Length: 318
Image (tube, rainbow, N blue to C red; front, top):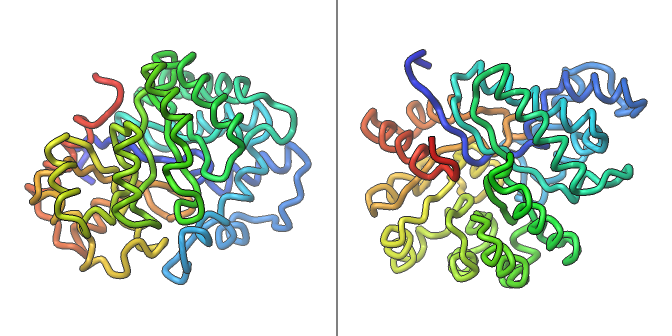
């Protein structure tokens, strides 16, 4: 990494990016028995690899982090610590996403979860200078009322620490069309939203996300299978939040040589490069660019375009 380069990460999950050290420290404070005592023993339980069979298997790595994200102290500390780590990577802008409904197991309300994460992000911004905002995730397979509450909170806190909303989770099991009511409400509230689509399902999932009003698409790999869809994404200037290593681990693509990033760029699509989950995928956005340069032959001009696209696609302007 050249120190002059400033990075942006638009697709970054809080629960998938906790450091093993943070998890162990919070578990000890809160009396949670993780069954391991060292970061070395914990890492294999948190991290996906090339033997991971699918997105559904990849998602299993989130259960341990969620155990230490059920208290206000845990959530605020996690948000703050992540911003600290981003600053060391020379990341100047980040959108950190999480699902408030997944942090209510021990009695927190969704609103309390939102307020505590916002507090951690704000402290991180103050101490480390990384502009950081939250994206609130609705969950595929989640209760309808809970997802609707998430959207209401996104509207309430929009511009007050929250930048937008998202739909995450098991795409192949829960079709995008099931969430029409939720995102109709998001549009009514003026909440911009991205939707994970085209990662574990085909082009039609992306089309459904666009029909719901998504202004960005998380991953979007399957768009390469549909020429008309690629033209629509380019024409409508819908950014794709691509995450190379994660996409390989979830088998959205089988080989980096098949990665459609360059095809999308050639079609005029606004492609961005992001980390997805720093711990689960064992990466960060700087590493993603290094990986693309070494294994994909990413050129200097392509990198410059991707970094420019990241700033252009951000929900909060400088």
